Amino acid sequence: MHRYMGTLGSQVMCNNIPGLVSKQRQICRQQPKVMQAIGLGMKDWITECQHQFRNHRWNCNTTARGKNLFGRLLLRSTREVAFVYAISSAGVVYTLARACSQGELVSCSCDPTKKGSSWDPKGSFNWGGCSDHVKHAMRFSQNFVDAKERKEKDARALMNLHNNRAGRRAVKRFMTLECKCHGVSGSCSLRTCWLAMADFRHTGNHLWKRYNAAVQVAVNQYGTGFTAAHSHFKPPTHNDLVYLEDSPDYCIRDQESGTMGTRGRLCQRMSRGADSCEAMCCGRGYDTSRVIRTTKCECKFHWCCAVHCRDCHQQVDVHTCKGKI
Image (cartoon, rainbow, N blue to C red; front, side, top):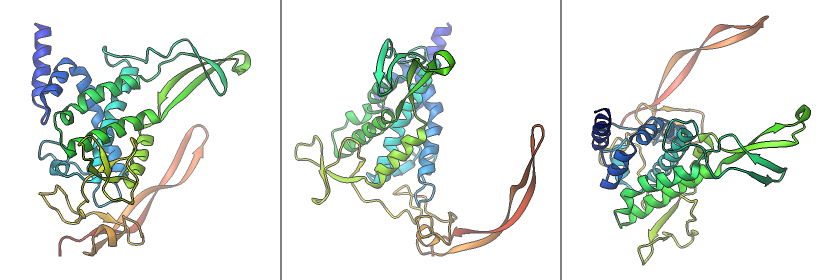
């Protein structure tokens, strides 16, 4: 009875996730615990996306409408969509590998290939600890995330597959060897090492650089890959993000394109970057209001062991973009 209820529960869960193709639903029903772990980890890559775009007109805002978190935006083939696919594919890899290493799933654990001894520039070491099983997570991500795109044969599907792959490769790029020394008085005559993923911020920063250098492409004559849309650009590599169409300006709320506009967004009056009031507000002007900010100040250490601070109040001007003129 318990097993039947578990199967029924996973079927209900998988049937209620919008936008899945049949293969994805099948994988979901077979591995509901994996899907739950990925669902819980989703907030991490959304937060990372919002961090990277925090000072831009499009700020990775999510919406409850439509069949996905980003509403109609994902119907476009812009560089912002390229980033969303890459960071979400990377997020699946990172979340799953971490869940495996932390023993949260019975279907996977640490990387079983990391055993015996090996070498690095510092000399020999023994594999030990728990190496993050990124290869397993990448295989699952490729099997699950790419299933929807493999069903299609058009340019957008090729774009999504390319950016999914670039996202997965970004996680693997920042694997580091971590070691623990053994020996008399910390002599490090013997080392035990394991491979660990770097903080997800490294992946986010890397994909942000790829976003800024993204290549606009067109499908080649065979329909199997890309050429640069402009002859003076280099063809994209496996690590590049690719996109098909120019982005809207994201200035005005537009349901058709899935943009929220910049009305009410904070801007920096003295900045000359993307977060400046001129750029963020698209020339519509901005409102200024004076608010009181409270910060901790005049902090003193008291023996032992406390820090006492005063609350300092400061009046600051806050600038927000005006609406449509």
